[in-house]
Length: 149
Image 1 (cartoon, rainbow, N blue to C red):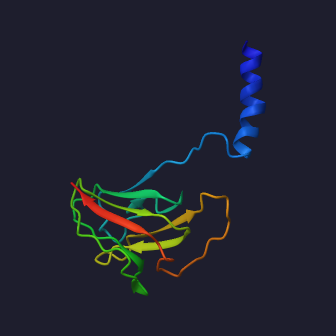
Image 2: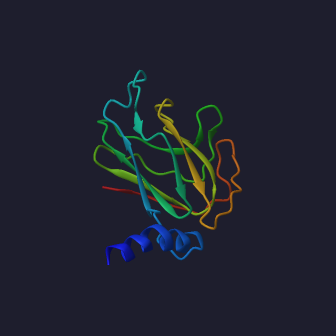
């Protein structure tokens, strides 16, 4: 019986996964934490993780563990916000979230603390490998966002 189970795990499961019949390891949520002391410009780790790769349709959740309210906008400090989403400030223990439904590279930052920034790479769910870097803006995204307390 053990041989049959091992045979399934090591032989049939990879074949099923290759043809799209297997299980997906994709999460529908991904959390990025704003760390305590993030507003200190000398901070080596204001957020964790800073750059992430997720699948289309993933909800990104920023959790504020810092003692200062934060606001995250798409874009870069050099080019400014692209105004695709624009939430409210969210305080200690609160979170802000968006759902990105289109593949692309999305830069974001806190306009008050420009050293707090990151990048989200969204990959397609259909094994398509075309991802376009949009230089700080969004690539025709479908975004749903909000703040939770």
